[in-house]
Amino acid sequence: MSDNQGILWEVFVQTKPGLPHKHCGSIHGHDKEMALQNARDLYTRRNEGTNIWIIPASEIVASSPEDTGSFFEPANDKVYRHPTFYKIADGITHM
Amino acid sequence: MTTQEALFNYCLRLADNHLILGHRLSELCSKGPVLEEDIACTNISLDLIGQANALLQYAASIENNGRNEDDLAFLRHERHFYNSLLSEQPNHDFAFTMVKQFLIDAFNYYLFDELKKSKDLTISALTTKGHKEITYHLRHSSTWIDRLGLGTDESNLRTQNAINELWRFTDDMFVMDEVDKMLITDGIATDLNIIKTKWQNTVNGAFEKANLKIPEKVWMQYGSKQGKHTEHLGFLLAEMQHLHRAYPGVKW
Image (cartoon, rainbow over all chains, first blue to last red):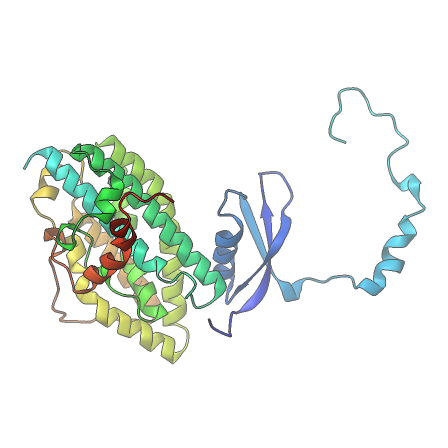
């Protein structure tokens, strides 16, 4: 096998039209088309998808573990941000 | 020759092209240039063998002589295989494999597109289904022709060498005989001259774009439709048929 496998791409697959694309893993590829084809072969061969997005892994901007405290913990004690104080009308199933 | 015999022979030709090309590609399993490409080639190989399986099933039902698709794949001798000479050529380097795939994918793409209109409903159904897979195969191999032709000096050289080596087997794909003529009259088969024009345009366009040349004055090799093959098919069959011959009727 070659040492030069191309850059790393993150793969997002949409399972049904209308649903959001979900991250399912990563693949290597030298160019966009190769990465797209590799993603198709690796992640949708068992009928998992209707659409694929691929993004160069280096282009993803991520928060770092050190940010966890300042980013996420302040939301813990603010229950009023959840819409749990409303009555849901009968017959509404997906909320 | 009866129409039934012609149809049986025609299905074997379609099936054998796929079976032998699929087997050749399966030889790359675990030996691909990178992990992702290994999976891609194995996927395509499985598509081809799956299509061959369906076509051989249909051939067996036409023959109606007690043989099934496994008998046709694993118990026929070399001289009774009708796959194109191009499909049986060994892999060599990756450029060689991709040039071979591309030349055959482009052929299959136009052939199956025409056969969708076949008056034989089974051939029409199988080629309609198969054409979707072949569309992807052609996309895969033609992007490799681009990449290798326009890549480095070495990748261009290797791809050009593969074209020079393989070109002499291309005309063999388009040979027609009484089997074709009989079935074309019945609206079952396709005139391969029509396929050749489309194939030539696609191949010329792709090679021109990728800075590759078609060699001139090549001595063409023929014979696959009479079961006359290059020396490579025998070795391929020895490996492919070994298990079935050593353990007749063995189940997975």
